[in-house]
Length: 447
Ligand SMILES: *Cc1c(COP(=O)(O)O)cnc(C)c1O
Image (cartoon, rainbow, N blue to C red; front, side, top):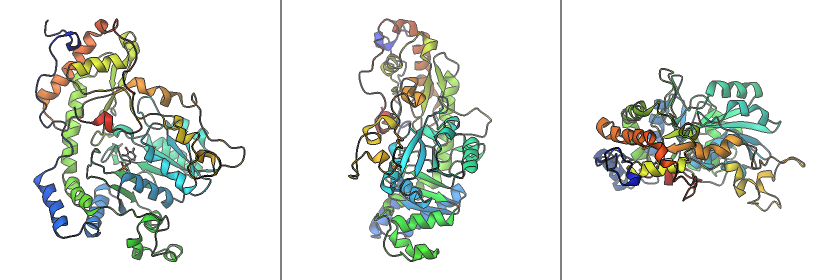
Protein backbone atom coordinates (compact mmCIF):
# COMPACT_ATOMS: atom_id res chain seq x y z
CA UNK A 1 0.00 0.00 0.00
CA UNK A 2 1.35 3.42 -0.95
CA UNK A 3 1.35 6.66 0.96
CA UNK A 4 -1.62 7.90 -0.99
CA UNK A 5 -3.83 4.91 -0.32
CA UNK A 6 -6.73 5.82 1.92
CA UNK A 7 -6.45 4.59 5.49
CA UNK A 8 -10.01 3.28 5.33
CA UNK A 9 -8.72 0.79 2.73
CA UNK A 10 -5.60 -0.10 4.71
CA UNK A 11 -3.24 2.69 3.69
CA UNK A 12 -1.20 4.73 6.18
CA UNK A 13 -2.98 7.45 8.13
CA UNK A 14 -2.40 11.01 6.94
CA UNK A 15 -2.16 12.16 10.56
CA UNK A 16 0.89 10.52 12.10
CA UNK A 17 2.06 12.98 14.76
CA UNK A 18 0.93 13.05 18.35
CA UNK A 19 -1.34 16.11 18.58
CA UNK A 20 0.07 16.94 22.02
CA UNK A 21 -1.98 19.70 23.63
CA UNK A 22 -3.13 21.26 20.37
CA UNK A 23 -6.77 20.36 21.19
CA UNK A 24 -6.57 20.82 24.96
CA UNK A 25 -9.19 23.21 26.27
CA UNK A 26 -9.58 25.01 28.55
CA UNK A 27 -5.97 25.80 29.29
CA UNK A 28 -5.49 25.36 33.04
CA UNK A 29 -2.31 27.12 34.11
CA UNK A 30 -0.76 27.64 37.51
CA UNK A 31 -2.21 31.14 37.44
CA UNK A 32 -5.72 29.71 37.10
CA UNK A 33 -5.13 27.20 39.87
CA UNK A 34 -3.76 29.85 42.20
CA UNK A 35 -6.71 32.14 41.58
CA UNK A 36 -9.15 29.35 42.42
CA UNK A 37 -7.25 28.30 45.52
CA UNK A 38 -7.17 31.85 46.76
CA UNK A 39 -10.98 32.05 46.68
CA UNK A 40 -11.34 28.60 48.23
CA UNK A 41 -8.95 29.38 51.05
CA UNK A 42 -10.55 32.74 51.75
CA UNK A 43 -13.91 30.98 52.13
CA UNK A 44 -15.46 33.25 49.52
CA UNK A 45 -17.20 30.86 47.20
CA UNK A 46 -20.60 32.49 47.58
CA UNK A 47 -19.54 36.13 47.94
CA UNK A 48 -19.68 38.63 45.10
CA UNK A 49 -16.43 40.60 45.43
CA UNK A 50 -14.41 38.55 42.92
CA UNK A 51 -17.44 38.43 40.65
CA UNK A 52 -17.76 42.22 40.73
CA UNK A 53 -14.15 42.54 39.61
CA UNK A 54 -14.75 40.05 36.83
CA UNK A 55 -17.84 41.97 35.70
CA UNK A 56 -15.97 45.24 35.63
CA UNK A 57 -13.13 43.76 33.59
CA UNK A 58 -15.56 42.02 31.24
CA UNK A 59 -17.50 45.24 30.63
CA UNK A 60 -14.26 47.11 29.95
CA UNK A 61 -13.05 44.43 27.55
CA UNK A 62 -16.31 44.52 25.61
CA UNK A 63 -16.67 48.28 25.83
CA UNK A 64 -20.10 48.38 27.48
CA UNK A 65 -21.44 49.97 30.64
CA UNK A 66 -22.83 46.99 32.54
CA UNK A 67 -21.98 43.34 32.97
CA UNK A 68 -23.96 41.06 35.26
CA UNK A 69 -22.52 37.62 35.98
CA UNK A 70 -24.84 34.60 36.09
CA UNK A 71 -24.38 31.00 37.12
CA UNK A 72 -24.60 29.92 33.48
CA UNK A 73 -25.34 31.25 30.03
CA UNK A 74 -28.90 29.97 30.13
CA UNK A 75 -29.58 32.06 33.24
CA UNK A 76 -28.03 35.12 31.59
CA UNK A 77 -30.38 34.66 28.63
CA UNK A 78 -33.34 34.28 30.97
CA UNK A 79 -32.34 37.49 32.74
CA UNK A 80 -31.93 39.27 29.42
CA UNK A 81 -35.38 38.19 28.28
CA UNK A 82 -36.95 39.51 31.46
CA UNK A 83 -34.65 42.51 31.18
CA UNK A 84 -36.07 43.61 27.84
CA UNK A 85 -39.59 43.06 29.13
CA UNK A 86 -40.73 39.77 27.59
CA UNK A 87 -44.08 38.88 29.08
CA UNK A 88 -47.14 36.79 28.55
CA UNK A 89 -48.15 36.44 24.92
CA UNK A 90 -44.97 37.96 23.50
CA UNK A 91 -43.14 36.37 20.61
CA UNK A 92 -39.42 36.28 20.02
CA UNK A 93 -37.85 35.43 16.68
CA UNK A 94 -34.89 33.09 16.93
CA UNK A 95 -32.99 30.85 14.51
CA UNK A 96 -34.00 27.19 14.64
CA UNK A 97 -30.39 26.07 14.47
CA UNK A 98 -28.91 26.97 17.83
CA UNK A 99 -28.52 25.62 21.34
CA UNK A 100 -31.94 25.56 23.02
CA UNK A 101 -31.04 28.15 25.68
CA UNK A 102 -31.08 30.88 23.03
CA UNK A 103 -34.89 30.82 23.18
CA UNK A 104 -36.35 28.27 25.57
CA UNK A 105 -36.32 30.46 28.71
CA UNK A 106 -39.11 32.57 27.13
CA UNK A 107 -41.58 29.84 28.03
CA UNK A 108 -41.28 30.56 31.73
CA UNK A 109 -42.08 34.22 31.03
CA UNK A 110 -45.27 33.29 29.21
CA UNK A 111 -43.72 34.08 25.84
CA UNK A 112 -43.24 31.93 22.81
CA UNK A 113 -40.81 31.48 19.93
CA UNK A 114 -41.20 31.93 16.22
CA UNK A 115 -38.27 30.43 14.39
CA UNK A 116 -36.60 32.02 11.40
CA UNK A 117 -34.50 30.11 8.92
CA UNK A 118 -30.74 30.36 8.70
CA UNK A 119 -28.51 31.46 5.87
CA UNK A 120 -26.80 28.39 4.39
CA UNK A 121 -23.42 30.16 4.14
CA UNK A 122 -23.17 31.98 7.47
CA UNK A 123 -25.34 29.42 9.33
CA UNK A 124 -26.74 32.40 11.25
CA UNK A 125 -30.29 33.77 11.21
CA UNK A 126 -31.23 34.84 7.68
CA UNK A 127 -32.25 38.51 7.78
CA UNK A 128 -34.40 37.93 4.70
CA UNK A 129 -36.52 35.46 6.65
CA UNK A 130 -37.08 37.65 9.71
CA UNK A 131 -39.52 40.25 8.49
CA UNK A 132 -42.25 37.88 7.38
CA UNK A 133 -42.20 36.31 10.85
CA UNK A 134 -43.00 39.60 12.58
CA UNK A 135 -46.50 39.98 14.06
CA UNK A 136 -48.05 42.58 16.35
CA UNK A 137 -46.94 40.35 19.23
CA UNK A 138 -43.24 40.22 18.28
CA UNK A 139 -41.08 41.76 20.96
CA UNK A 140 -37.53 40.78 20.10
CA UNK A 141 -35.10 39.17 17.73
CA UNK A 142 -32.60 36.77 19.24
CA UNK A 143 -29.42 36.67 17.22
CA UNK A 144 -26.91 33.85 17.59
CA UNK A 145 -23.40 34.33 16.21
CA UNK A 146 -23.38 30.68 15.35
CA UNK A 147 -20.15 28.66 15.54
CA UNK A 148 -18.26 31.90 15.90
CA UNK A 149 -19.63 33.52 12.76
CA UNK A 150 -21.00 37.02 13.33
CA UNK A 151 -24.57 37.36 12.06
CA UNK A 152 -25.46 40.08 9.55
CA UNK A 153 -25.95 42.80 12.16
CA UNK A 154 -26.45 45.70 9.72
CA UNK A 155 -29.49 44.06 8.20
CA UNK A 156 -30.81 42.76 11.52
CA UNK A 157 -30.50 46.08 13.36
CA UNK A 158 -32.20 47.81 10.45
CA UNK A 159 -35.19 45.46 10.73
CA UNK A 160 -35.26 45.85 14.50
CA UNK A 161 -35.28 49.64 14.27
CA UNK A 162 -37.98 49.76 11.63
CA UNK A 163 -40.26 47.46 13.63
CA UNK A 164 -39.32 48.75 17.07
CA UNK A 165 -38.02 45.39 18.26
CA UNK A 166 -35.43 44.62 20.91
CA UNK A 167 -32.37 42.59 19.99
CA UNK A 168 -30.70 40.02 22.22
CA UNK A 169 -27.32 38.83 20.98
CA UNK A 170 -26.40 35.33 22.08
CA UNK A 171 -22.61 35.51 21.89
CA UNK A 172 -21.99 32.10 23.45
CA UNK A 173 -20.11 30.92 20.36
CA UNK A 174 -18.35 34.13 19.50
CA UNK A 175 -16.58 35.80 22.41
CA UNK A 176 -14.38 38.50 20.97
CA UNK A 177 -15.55 38.09 17.36
CA UNK A 178 -15.75 41.28 15.34
CA UNK A 179 -18.49 42.32 12.94
CA UNK A 180 -17.03 44.94 10.59
CA UNK A 181 -14.44 45.86 13.20
CA UNK A 182 -16.82 46.09 16.16
CA UNK A 183 -17.15 43.45 18.84
CA UNK A 184 -20.26 41.25 18.76
CA UNK A 185 -22.40 41.85 21.81
CA UNK A 186 -22.28 45.62 21.28
CA UNK A 187 -24.98 45.86 18.59
CA UNK A 188 -28.19 44.76 20.26
CA UNK A 189 -29.93 45.94 23.42
CA UNK A 190 -28.38 43.22 25.52
CA UNK A 191 -25.92 40.36 25.00
CA UNK A 192 -25.31 37.05 26.72
CA UNK A 193 -22.20 34.94 26.83
CA UNK A 194 -22.03 31.37 28.06
CA UNK A 195 -18.72 30.77 29.82
CA UNK A 196 -19.05 27.00 30.24
CA UNK A 197 -15.85 25.09 29.92
CA UNK A 198 -16.13 24.14 26.25
CA UNK A 199 -16.71 27.71 25.09
CA UNK A 200 -13.91 29.88 23.74
CA UNK A 201 -13.81 31.98 26.89
CA UNK A 202 -13.94 28.99 29.19
CA UNK A 203 -14.47 29.66 32.89
CA UNK A 204 -16.54 26.70 34.09
CA UNK A 205 -20.28 26.98 34.54
CA UNK A 206 -21.03 30.65 34.13
CA UNK A 207 -22.66 33.27 31.97
CA UNK A 208 -22.39 37.01 31.44
CA UNK A 209 -25.13 39.47 30.60
CA UNK A 210 -23.95 42.78 29.15
CA UNK A 211 -25.80 45.95 28.20
CA UNK A 212 -25.52 49.71 27.93
CA UNK A 213 -29.12 50.04 29.07
CA UNK A 214 -29.44 50.73 32.80
CA UNK A 215 -33.08 49.66 32.87
CA UNK A 216 -32.30 46.24 31.33
CA UNK A 217 -29.43 45.80 33.78
CA UNK A 218 -31.62 46.61 36.76
CA UNK A 219 -34.47 44.40 35.57
CA UNK A 220 -32.02 41.50 35.28
CA UNK A 221 -30.88 42.28 38.82
CA UNK A 222 -34.41 42.41 40.18
CA UNK A 223 -35.19 39.11 38.46
CA UNK A 224 -32.47 36.85 39.78
CA UNK A 225 -29.92 38.71 41.93
CA UNK A 226 -31.55 39.66 45.21
CA UNK A 227 -28.12 40.26 46.79
CA UNK A 228 -27.62 43.19 44.38
CA UNK A 229 -30.91 44.94 45.03
CA UNK A 230 -29.12 47.85 46.71
CA UNK A 231 -28.04 48.81 43.18
CA UNK A 232 -31.60 49.46 42.01
CA UNK A 233 -32.46 53.07 41.11
CA UNK A 234 -35.84 52.83 39.36
CA UNK A 235 -38.67 53.40 41.83
CA UNK A 236 -40.90 50.68 40.43
CA UNK A 237 -38.09 48.14 40.80
CA UNK A 238 -37.04 49.37 44.24
CA UNK A 239 -40.59 48.81 45.45
CA UNK A 240 -40.03 45.08 45.08
CA UNK A 241 -36.45 44.94 46.31
CA UNK A 242 -35.25 42.24 48.65
CA UNK A 243 -36.71 39.23 46.93
CA UNK A 244 -35.93 38.05 43.38
CA UNK A 245 -38.94 38.65 41.16
CA UNK A 246 -38.33 35.59 39.08
CA UNK A 247 -37.88 33.40 42.10
CA UNK A 248 -34.45 32.55 40.74
CA UNK A 249 -31.00 32.83 42.24
CA UNK A 250 -28.60 33.44 39.43
CA UNK A 251 -25.38 34.60 41.06
CA UNK A 252 -22.11 33.31 39.68
CA UNK A 253 -19.99 30.90 41.71
CA UNK A 254 -16.86 32.80 42.68
CA UNK A 255 -14.63 29.93 41.56
CA UNK A 256 -15.93 30.64 38.08
CA UNK A 257 -15.29 34.35 38.55
CA UNK A 258 -11.72 33.64 39.65
CA UNK A 259 -11.08 31.44 36.63
CA UNK A 260 -12.83 33.99 34.44
CA UNK A 261 -10.59 36.85 35.49
CA UNK A 262 -7.46 34.93 34.51
CA UNK A 263 -8.97 33.59 31.28
CA UNK A 264 -10.15 37.03 30.23
CA UNK A 265 -6.74 38.55 30.90
CA UNK A 266 -5.14 36.09 28.48
CA UNK A 267 -8.06 35.76 26.10
CA UNK A 268 -6.95 38.26 23.44
CA UNK A 269 -3.66 36.45 23.03
CA UNK A 270 -5.26 32.97 23.05
CA UNK A 271 -7.84 34.15 20.54
CA UNK A 272 -5.16 35.52 18.23
CA UNK A 273 -3.32 32.20 18.26
CA UNK A 274 -6.51 30.23 17.55
CA UNK A 275 -7.45 32.60 14.73
CA UNK A 276 -4.02 32.19 13.19
CA UNK A 277 -4.14 28.40 13.53
CA UNK A 278 -7.65 28.01 12.10
CA UNK A 279 -7.01 30.36 9.20
CA UNK A 280 -3.77 28.54 8.44
CA UNK A 281 -5.69 25.25 8.35
CA UNK A 282 -8.34 26.63 6.01
CA UNK A 283 -5.83 28.40 3.79
CA UNK A 284 -4.20 25.01 3.14
CA UNK A 285 -7.41 23.38 1.92
CA UNK A 286 -9.61 26.22 0.69
CA UNK A 287 -10.41 25.68 -2.97
CA UNK A 288 -10.62 21.89 -2.83
CA UNK A 289 -13.86 20.65 -4.35
CA UNK A 290 -16.61 19.60 -1.97
CA UNK A 291 -15.72 21.87 0.91
CA UNK A 292 -15.85 25.54 1.85
CA UNK A 293 -14.61 27.25 4.95
CA UNK A 294 -17.14 28.78 7.33
CA UNK A 295 -15.33 32.05 7.93
CA UNK A 296 -15.80 35.70 7.03
CA UNK A 297 -14.05 37.08 3.93
CA UNK A 298 -10.52 38.23 4.64
CA UNK A 299 -10.06 41.95 5.07
CA UNK A 300 -13.75 42.47 5.89
CA UNK A 301 -12.98 43.38 9.50
CA UNK A 302 -15.26 40.52 10.52
CA UNK A 303 -13.63 37.73 12.53
CA UNK A 304 -14.59 34.56 14.38
CA UNK A 305 -13.10 35.30 17.80
CA UNK A 306 -12.08 32.02 19.41
CA UNK A 307 -13.60 29.84 16.63
CA UNK A 308 -15.92 27.90 18.92
CA UNK A 309 -16.76 24.46 17.49
CA UNK A 310 -15.43 25.22 14.00
CA UNK A 311 -17.22 23.63 11.06
CA UNK A 312 -16.90 23.52 7.31
CA UNK A 313 -19.59 23.62 4.63
CA UNK A 314 -20.01 20.47 2.57
CA UNK A 315 -20.85 20.43 -1.15
CA UNK A 316 -21.67 16.85 -1.99
CA UNK A 317 -22.61 17.76 -5.58
CA UNK A 318 -18.97 18.64 -6.28
CA UNK A 319 -17.93 15.11 -5.32
CA UNK A 320 -20.48 13.24 -7.44
CA UNK A 321 -22.89 12.99 -4.53
CA UNK A 322 -20.47 11.52 -2.00
CA UNK A 323 -22.34 11.65 1.28
CA UNK A 324 -21.04 13.67 4.19
CA UNK A 325 -21.21 10.49 6.28
CA UNK A 326 -18.79 8.63 4.04
CA UNK A 327 -16.64 11.74 3.79
CA UNK A 328 -16.31 12.11 7.57
CA UNK A 329 -15.87 8.40 8.16
CA UNK A 330 -12.97 8.38 5.72
CA UNK A 331 -11.40 11.40 7.37
CA UNK A 332 -11.71 9.79 10.79
CA UNK A 333 -9.83 6.77 9.48
CA UNK A 334 -7.06 9.19 8.47
CA UNK A 335 -6.91 10.42 12.06
CA UNK A 336 -9.05 13.55 11.79
CA UNK A 337 -11.72 14.18 14.45
CA UNK A 338 -14.74 15.20 12.37
CA UNK A 339 -18.47 14.52 12.27
CA UNK A 340 -21.35 15.61 10.09
CA UNK A 341 -24.05 17.90 11.42
CA UNK A 342 -24.55 20.68 13.91
CA UNK A 343 -27.46 21.52 16.20
CA UNK A 344 -30.76 19.91 15.26
CA UNK A 345 -33.66 22.14 14.13
CA UNK A 346 -35.45 23.16 17.31
CA UNK A 347 -38.82 23.70 15.65
CA UNK A 348 -39.20 19.96 15.06
CA UNK A 349 -38.71 18.93 18.69
CA UNK A 350 -41.83 17.88 20.66
CA UNK A 351 -41.17 20.65 23.20
CA UNK A 352 -42.01 23.13 20.44
CA UNK A 353 -44.99 21.17 19.19
CA UNK A 354 -46.89 19.00 21.64
CA UNK A 355 -45.55 19.23 25.18
CA UNK A 356 -47.68 21.00 27.77
CA UNK A 357 -45.07 22.03 30.33
CA UNK A 358 -47.20 24.14 32.65
CA UNK A 359 -50.55 22.39 32.56
CA UNK A 360 -52.34 24.90 30.33
CA UNK A 361 -54.30 22.17 28.64
CA UNK A 362 -52.50 22.91 25.38
CA UNK A 363 -48.92 22.84 24.14
CA UNK A 364 -46.81 25.47 25.87
CA UNK A 365 -45.68 26.81 22.50
CA UNK A 366 -49.19 28.14 21.90
CA UNK A 367 -50.47 28.38 25.47
CA UNK A 368 -50.50 32.19 25.52
CA UNK A 369 -51.22 32.88 21.86
CA UNK A 370 -54.53 34.52 20.96
CA UNK A 371 -57.28 32.09 19.98
CA UNK A 372 -56.85 30.87 16.41
CA UNK A 373 -53.17 31.77 16.36
CA UNK A 374 -50.86 28.81 16.02
CA UNK A 375 -47.18 29.70 15.74
CA UNK A 376 -45.98 26.11 15.46
CA UNK A 377 -43.89 25.37 12.40
CA UNK A 378 -44.23 21.89 10.90
CA UNK A 379 -41.62 20.03 8.91
CA UNK A 380 -41.10 21.87 5.63
CA UNK A 381 -41.47 25.37 7.04
CA UNK A 382 -37.75 26.08 7.53
CA UNK A 383 -36.04 24.24 4.68
CA UNK A 384 -32.47 25.39 5.22
CA UNK A 385 -32.53 24.54 8.93
CA UNK A 386 -34.04 21.15 8.18
CA UNK A 387 -31.43 20.19 5.61
CA UNK A 388 -28.28 21.74 7.01
CA UNK A 389 -27.23 18.61 8.90
CA UNK A 390 -25.89 16.96 5.75
CA UNK A 391 -24.21 20.14 4.54
CA UNK A 392 -21.80 20.79 7.40
CA UNK A 393 -19.06 18.90 9.15
CA UNK A 394 -16.95 19.71 12.17
CA UNK A 395 -13.25 20.37 11.75
CA UNK A 396 -10.54 19.99 14.40
CA UNK A 397 -10.42 22.92 16.79
CA UNK A 398 -6.81 23.92 16.78
CA UNK A 399 -6.09 25.84 19.94
CA UNK A 400 -2.38 26.17 19.18
CA UNK A 401 -0.59 27.44 16.12
CA UNK A 402 1.64 24.48 15.26
CA UNK A 403 1.88 24.59 11.48
CA UNK A 404 3.58 21.21 10.96
CA UNK A 405 0.87 19.40 12.94
CA UNK A 406 -1.99 21.37 11.42
CA UNK A 407 -0.65 20.58 7.97
CA UNK A 408 -1.06 16.83 8.58
CA UNK A 409 -4.77 17.36 9.20
CA UNK A 410 -5.07 19.54 6.12
CA UNK A 411 -3.21 16.88 4.10
CA UNK A 412 -5.79 14.34 5.26
CA UNK A 413 -8.58 16.46 3.74
CA UNK A 414 -6.60 16.80 0.52
CA UNK A 415 -5.93 13.07 0.38
CA UNK A 416 -9.58 12.14 0.92
CA UNK A 417 -10.85 14.63 -1.61
CA UNK A 418 -8.29 13.66 -4.24
CA UNK A 419 -9.35 10.03 -3.88
CA UNK A 420 -13.08 10.59 -3.46
CA UNK A 421 -14.03 8.41 -6.45
CA UNK A 422 -12.82 5.32 -4.59
CA UNK A 423 -15.36 6.10 -1.88
CA UNK A 424 -18.43 6.22 -4.09
CA UNK A 425 -19.06 2.45 -4.41
CA UNK A 426 -19.07 1.84 -0.64
CA UNK A 427 -21.20 4.90 0.15
CA UNK A 428 -24.42 3.77 1.82
CA UNK A 429 -25.41 7.44 2.26
CA UNK A 430 -26.50 6.65 5.76
CA UNK A 431 -25.19 7.54 9.15
CA UNK A 432 -24.42 4.88 11.72
CA UNK A 433 -25.20 7.36 14.48
CA UNK A 434 -27.43 10.43 14.94
CA UNK A 435 -26.33 13.45 12.95
CA UNK A 436 -25.94 16.50 15.11
CA UNK A 437 -27.61 16.82 18.48
CA UNK A 438 -29.53 19.11 20.80
CA UNK A 439 -26.23 20.11 22.42
CA UNK A 440 -22.79 20.47 20.96
CA UNK A 441 -20.69 18.52 23.45
CA UNK A 442 -20.53 15.27 21.53
CA UNK A 443 -19.29 17.08 18.46
CA UNK A 444 -16.57 19.15 20.05
CA UNK A 445 -15.17 16.58 22.41
CA UNK A 446 -11.46 16.12 21.95
CA UNK A 447 -10.37 13.14 19.84
C1 LIG B 1 -23.72 27.13 25.52
C2 LIG B 1 -24.79 27.97 24.95
C3 LIG B 1 -25.76 28.61 25.74
C4 LIG B 1 -26.01 28.31 27.18
O1 LIG B 1 -25.01 28.45 28.01
P1 LIG B 1 -24.79 27.56 29.33
O2 LIG B 1 -23.66 28.27 29.98
O3 LIG B 1 -24.44 26.19 28.86
O4 LIG B 1 -26.05 27.60 30.10
C5 LIG B 1 -26.63 29.48 25.13
N1 LIG B 1 -26.59 29.69 23.82
C6 LIG B 1 -25.71 29.07 23.02
C7 LIG B 1 -25.72 29.38 21.56
C8 LIG B 1 -24.79 28.18 23.55
O5 LIG B 1 -23.94 27.52 22.75
